[in-house]
Length: 33
Image: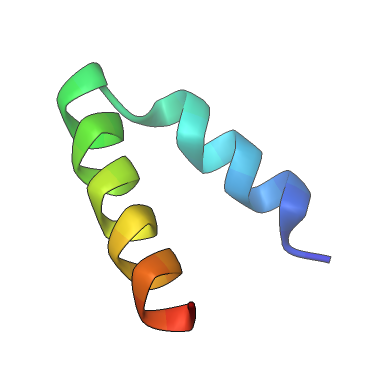
């Protein structure tokens, strides 16, 4: 499962990168819905 890898990657991101990642996730969720 990719969950552990994703969490490790998240902890390596800076706050700015996390904000960008959240925007990407939000866009993907909109497309999925």
